[in-house]
Image (tube, rainbow, N blue to C red; front, side):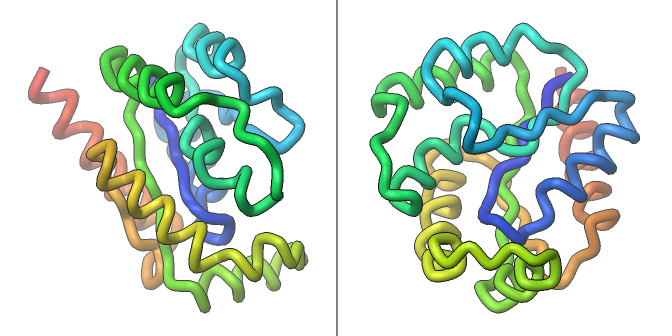
Length: 164
């Protein structure tokens, strides 16, 4: 089992990832700004089984603009990685929420990085566009608890697995 949870800061990725990991008996891998995020890094991440990724390749398509840095992946590499992940049965989900909810959640946990706070509309729009482009289920967490979101994800995964 491999699950990727993507989305803007403040959408509940980490909370949902932990619940899913507990449910499926998986590890959580939290990808951070310190990870190399190059083609080999994402390719090698497929070697791990029974994992819930708290961020993965989609973030590399969003955050270079926010942090004013060069992208580590070429567009065709990103496309190839995502296609290959899907071919390998990786379950992708993009979490979204409204801007005010994201900001409030970030402030509650003490994350006051102005680069993120001032770019939340861009980040949300970009993740929504990527979810649409790559046909990835998008779940709005604005009015849902992490438990409820995790249950929705589990339902989608079970329906997908039962079709195999």
